Each structure stands twice: as C-alpha cells, then as structure tokens.
Length: 131
Image 1 (cartoon, rainbow, N blue to C red):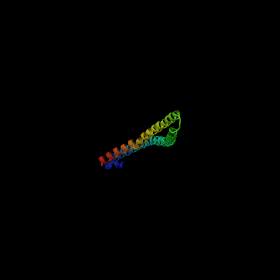
Image 2: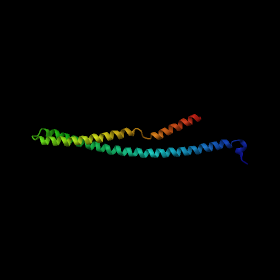
Image 3: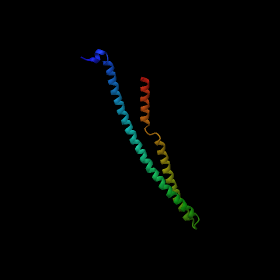
Image 4: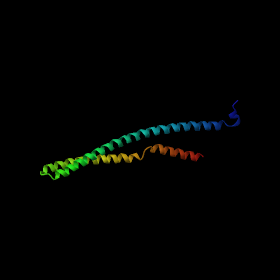
C-alpha cells in the first residue's frame, strides 16, 4: 500500500525529488565553473608574479643604465655619449613594455570568478522569485 498516494502527497514528493535533483545538477555545474575560473585566476596570478619580478629587475637595470648615461654624458668623446644614451633608452623601453603588461594583467585581476558570481546571483534571484 502506497501511503503517499493515499494521502495525495505523491505529487508533492515527486516535485521535491525533482527540485533536489535539479539543485544537485546546478551545484555540480557551479563547482565546475568555479574550477575553471580558479584555473584562469591562477594563470593570471602567475603572470602577475613573473611580470612583477621582470619590472623590478628592469627598473634596477634601467636606473643603473640611466645613471651611467648621465655620467658618460660628461666624458670627453661624443661617441660614448651616444652609445650610453642608446643603451639606456633600450632599457627604458623594455621597462615600459613590462610595466604596460603588468598593468594590463592587474586590470584583469579584478574580474576573478565573474561568471561564478553572476550564476550564483541569478540562482539567488530565482530562489527569491519562487518563495
């Protein structure tokens, strides 16, 4: 004898079962999405670390070269001057490129887990509408 059908609760139980299954599938999807976004976030963190080291190293080198260029500027021959400024200019260009890449990666860092947050916000709106 099926007590749920006798009491008229079989549709209610089926609806709850369907909701639990749907919730489990949705939770699984959200976890998969969070994993994908965490992988992307780790990649950006690695890039940020490498570029920070590169910018720090190139800053030291650029400042050293710039100092040498200024010192050489006051030496006797104009060939030393040209060479020193060209080397210093090359280091400054390398530093500027690394700095631009670092700023670009840092701007992307603020958008971590954007898709997961968006999905969870949509889920929360759906839950509130059902209540």
